[in-house]
Image: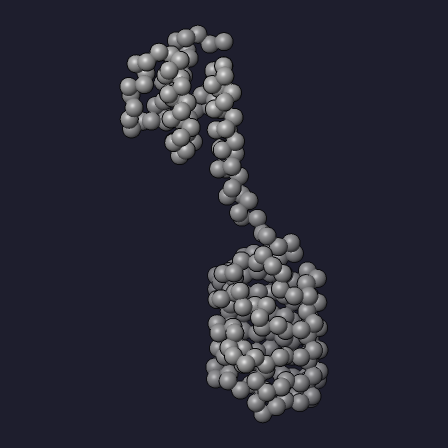
Length: 233
């Protein structure tokens, strides 16, 4: 048990750290009232008590300490734990980062996905799904990513591309569909992504293309359609 002078000294220290800007009158009261006043204000000013010295949490005894200090310690635990939890990737098998041009990226290579998993950050601009189990290309699955720039589905099992009646991924610029199971591309296959500039279709089983397979792609610059020398464009 600390002496009265030591307790008052610690109370003063706690009070100064918590209220350096005001409330000097509390120390003129009795020891019990000062302790109660200091504890009350230390608890309510949440940003200030982060600076309170450690002795202030453990130097006093009595019912007031049992009532106030555990709540403060628990809140401090949440304050420091919160940012750590927020930085943990929400989807197992995917690794967040940035591409060479510093765009937000999720790399989900060879993670066993057959569709876009929930929980990915909507602000992601580059989605990498090489060597997964996609058996279809659903444009709507990517609509949550409003700023999507690149999608990589190389090495999946996509047999066809379904045309869309209206644009859905208006910011998509790069689409990689190499090494899938594509055999043909119907009219308007990529109407869902009119801003497409790079399209990779290498190592598929394409045997024919429609005259309108790439209709609506006014910005398309690169299209690799080689399939064992059968189709080239």
